[in-house]
Amino acid sequence: MRSIFRILRHFAVLSGCALVALLVVYAGVAWASAAFPKPGRVQALTGAEPAVYACVTTVHADFAMPLDDPDTDWRAELGNSLPQAVPDSAYLLLGWGDAVFFREVLDLKDLTPGRALPALVGRNPSVVRLVPVGDPAGAPSCRLLPIDAAGRKALADHILASLETKVDGAHTELPTPVAGETLLLAKGHWGALNTCNQWASRGLAAAGLPHAAFAPFAFGVTMPLGKETAEGDTGDDQL
Image 1 (tube, rainbow, N blue to C red):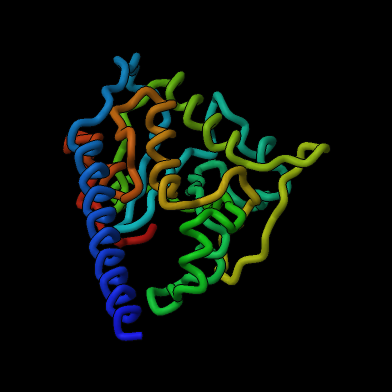
Image 2 (cartoon, one colour):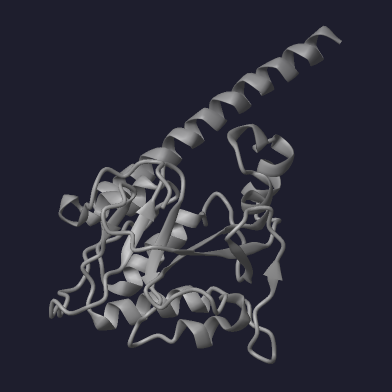
């Protein structure tokens, strides 16, 4: 019996060491991908493009897209999911993520093993969160993205392609306890290798901007962009 306990104890120690090593490799690959990003393309900027922003907190990245966009009819694309009272001067803050996180993890104390573990293995549905906001210019958590019309359209297409669509073209709304936001059922599942920030990095790639190949953390979105796109420090401030 004593030998069995000894074997189990050694197994537990080895498992713990393996887990720590895996986490170190995970974080190291993420940092390296952000520090040595894939390059973007040359943008055909005219100076008249509507501004687009990446709004990044410590843990999550969104895109702020202008509602009044000559190349994407957001009202038509989002249908009744977008309140008609939203003015044309508004921006749409859009981000992809785990439905349970958006609906139930509203504070750090809400992040329990029962909520975290199913998300890590990709068992929960995903959503695109939509929040109408004012012009993000000057917001400390937002960076202006230097993208041309083609890049802006590609980024919008990336966002819209993430949504699940019914046969009639409508989207499925999920209830949310947060006033002012709309959660739309999305494709895919959040997981350790497919986080909200990885989704944002794919959006940067679609737009033709520098991006990390592996971006599970928020710094994987901001680091490839460089300081030249900064509108302010990237912190936890919300619009």
